[in-house]
Image (cartoon, rainbow, N blue to C red; front, side, top):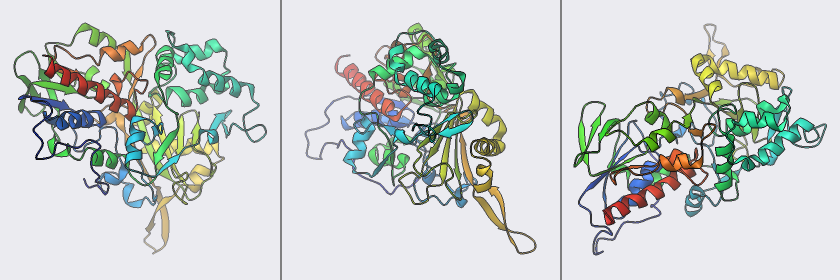
Length: 480
């Protein structure tokens, strides 16, 4: 993997003539996972002079931050045919907050960004996408639309509720016409669907979250390259293709066993793997994890997740539209070329939860299902205007064949197995606190699911959790 954005880290190591490391520690800290949380934990500890080794199950760093530009051309069939002149993301594609943790990194590097103005979002009611403007051009005068937008705006007021989001929607009397629209704004946004996600916990998270809430994308730099550049000092410490399958943290030192039987040792371990891996037994722990951990883990889910990028010959959904929210089978379309290119005719599809599982079963035929959805929304224009691969037939004529697209089914990725964590009905922020607590000063946890600042499910949450976790590791060394 190469990067064109190698910039110095925000935290620099001691100069050669410095008196020595900030913390004198003879042990080794093993970090499991080289996503945003794992890289940041390793970076903080490394810069304090602590020896760190990072074990990554996959063949590249970034975890669920995965940029198309960094992938080999033969990895995805559609790559050689794409013409989009801006970065395309297969994982995290935007971030929330100019003043967020990731936003501050972007500011330090002085990277160009594009604001996705949510005022230009389109919403689907009765199978018709319109903006929030007044009638007849938009849904601004529709009572079901207004009720749905009011519910979304006041989601934070449901903190403490044990209901699912859908139960809360029903209790609020929002018309069924707007239910899919709310699923696009809430359930799908948070990694699942409204009938599976807990209203109280999401309300609590939105109460805890600070910042301006603006949604931004990097204009010219892939998100994965930003991680590579920010944490370039950690990259030599990463062992790729090394899935850790068991951690025996009772003895001294801790014994780590990889899937191929190789063994490693460490004095402390930081686990940053997704909730799906922990719940699925991808890593066994000896002794077993505390009941407070497993009990809270059971209240957090991680649903199926599907992402696709499709190119079209023309923009038929609106040059100023950012998101199209609330279709029956595709809760979120995003116009990823908006304010990034004159070629603003590329849609990014994000589907989480049971709908994503259904697309996963279709395999390569999923794209046809998505185009059918667009045809229903825009009177056949999805199939009409999709860009297709051109080829020469036996008669020497140029013909169009398959649609140009790339899809990433995160559900089938063996060491990820889904999108991002979401709270189930009855969960609270305390459950995220519990799965982030250290065990006997030797086993530590980070990752977006352990974030307690209201940014779970986001890169900001992963970075926040890394800061907390690194501080816990340091304190365990200084105060054994």
